[in-house]
Length: 124
Image 1 (cartoon, rainbow, N blue to C red):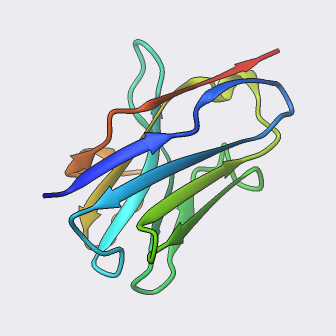
Image 2: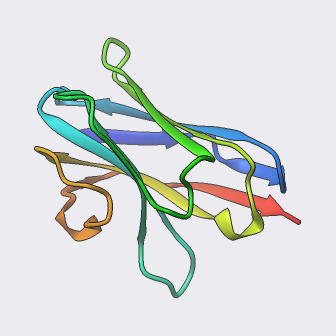
Image 3: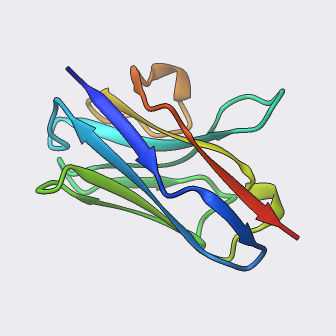
């Protein structure tokens, strides 16, 4: 059974940092891609970043390039999203999701398995 559990959200001041974690089970990252998405009330779910270890591919939304870094630890079955230089507009519920194969996070509706989400709030 595929499962994903996010953690690490919280309240941080603008300019600060947070690291989100996604614990996955039921698959290997060699075969799957994992992505981070975010969503605010009334808005479409937005792709933030994605990773697969099959060839080391990563993808980032333009809005987070240079500030966020996605990484994985296959032995621990963890994917991380290091978020630096946070801005109030980064405030959202952040979800990790998985799909068999490689699909970049700008295609959220192709992702099949989803975690429950973790709230990130950036105060100005």
